[in-house]
Amino acid sequence: MSNLAALLDVLIVLGVVVSAILACHFEKLLSAVISLSVTGIFCAAAFLLMHAPDVAISEAAVGAALTPLIFIVALKKMRGGDD
Image (cartoon, rainbow, N blue to C red; front, side):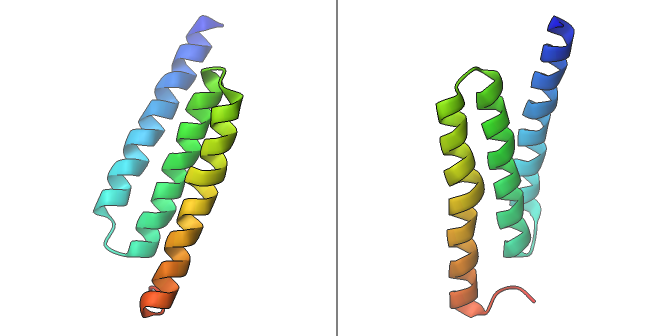
């Protein structure tokens, strides 16, 4: 069971790193915001595996839902969003 937990940890860290790198490399801002939201979801999963469910819920609410929503609304108001 320990090997399974270690494998899951590695996959989550890999997901965080890959989605963060993709957020930096996307040309369209909307794609970068979505990738940033995926990073928040992976971080929430990492916190959940570290037995911190309160932090995981906060990260899921703020990092994966609220912050991308604010960015998307700002993009739409600023220039009509990406086409």
